[in-house]
Image (cartoon, rainbow, N blue to C red):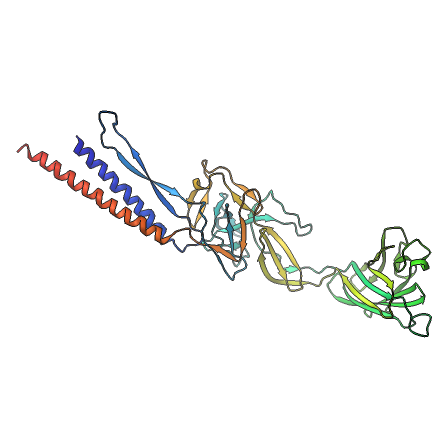
Length: 440
């Protein structure tokens, strides 16, 4: 009977509009939830009988219409570990499932994906967002700096101390004066440079380099340290241009020879480094330090050009003292970097961006998270801003993609549609009552 069909259709309309109202309510409630993705509503018509001569009332069903790929507003924050994704993709996160007896956090083997990038470190040093999900990244080898893209694991800051690095190389950039002082044939007074070097324990030791001119184009460098007894380490003779007897341009190093004490040098070879080395023991074992002075026959490092004064352009070394944890920052390529109070830094992990062929087909989970489904396709972890993956915006978060004005407009429509379907139910009931009363 058509009245029954109309009644059933109107009731399905009430149910569908109630579902739409529930989605709108959920969206409005999460209008300020970081990384939240709204759920719209699609309506699907189901037929009973429909032909060119008859059409029986059918039904309508509400289906969720996910907006997982719609960008939310990115807002700058003052928190260095906050990250937002501009474009497509998700952060890969893990859900903790408890602590074992040793106190080590264990995680669910099920990977989760989220756009909620309001990360901060917890008491165990993990990067965790406000929903309690742990950020995953590719680990970085602390020695080589190589990124292992075959492993994706929760990021934990455990390297709170930067071990000292003994000095193994010193680089000198300077110009020795080619013009002696007036009335003299050579510069008798030594020209000195000083640098601090570190031993294996990170203890600093001063080292001086004193230059004495023997003749035009011919110098002796004496190396000493007040940390040693006696202070003298050794010396070497350095010649420039024609004074070296080798085919090098004027003013460039042509030979290092006549080494004494703990100083050694390989001597001239065209195009090779003009280096010498000295070995010292500051109390933590023998330590060989290479003193680089440029390249034979090339105007770099140490030169001898016009002038009456010693011109020091740079004196650097590669050793560092021990350092303690100072801060943790992120970079646009997803690198997680630990800074130490000795001026050093270390990359401990790199955060990839995970993309899907059909991200709107992901399964919603608690805490603004998603899991992969057969319809979403397999997750693909990419470096940020490559192969379609979005870029990482540091010190920022992505807000909800809910538009309150749009939701209120849909709310009005849903309310009116619900009222209209309720009126259809009331009218169908009245017609049915009239039909029943006809029998009396």
